[in-house]
Length: 146
Image (cartoon, rainbow, N blue to C red; front, side, top):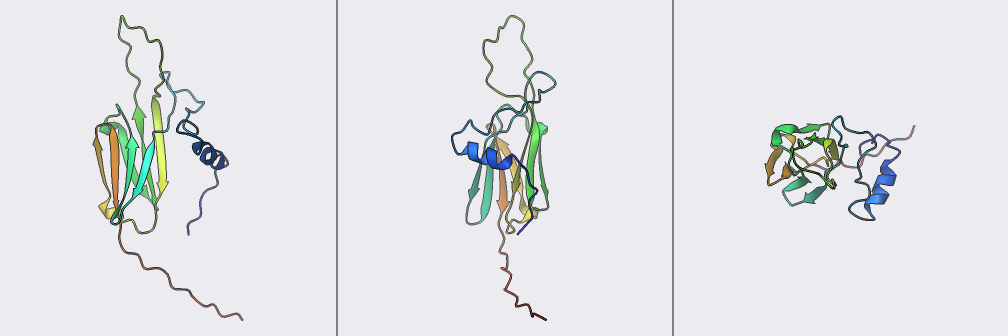
C-alpha cells in the first residue's frame, strides 16, 4: 500500500465526476497566456489479462507537444493544446473547446512492467500500453510480542 498525498479537492472532484461527463472537467480559473484555459483531457483506463491500457483524448494535439513519464508507480501525461491562430475575415461566434496546458496522473498497481510501457498516438487518441507481470503476494508475517 502506498501513501497518497492528500489533496483537499480530490474528493469533491470524484463526487462531481459521478454526475456526468462535464462535472469535474471544467477549465481551471487561471487563464492561459494566449486566452485559453488549462484543461483536463478525458481518459479511459482499461484492465486486460496481460496489460493495462490508458486512452486519452487529445484532438489537435501534436505528439511532439505531449510527454509521458513514469516515476515511482505513477504515470503522468502532460502537454499543451495550442491556441489556433485567428484567420483574417473569420468571426468566431462561439468557442467551447479548451486550450492550454494539461496534466493527468495515474497511480498504477505493482504488477506493471515499467520497461515495457509503450505509447502511441493515432486519430487524436493517445494510447499507453502498460504490460503486466506476475508479482508475488507478500506472505503474512507473525510478529513476536515482547
